[in-house]
Length: 121
Image (cartoon, rainbow, N blue to C red; front, side, top):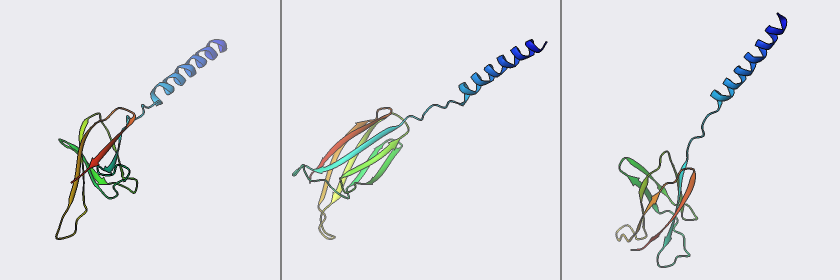
């Protein structure tokens, strides 16, 4: 009787361990990252600091400013093909001088996609 109880307890413990391992494992969330670098078309070695970057399509919209390295980074939840707009006003209050550039990007699951936008007047 004790041998039968010991065998059953061992099997129950093994089944419980397998169930815990199966149900406790969570799937990692998929990541879709994009890094946009903004440069001047007239001098491609210069990065544009403070450019307004908008990544959008339909109901998806992310916007922000490029950093000192001319980069803007964003994360998304799903795969998509998105439009990127980059603008900066280099003029004065009474005399605006807009630079702009456009591009598109396709987000890839669990990878970082890099896109460079060259802006010009």
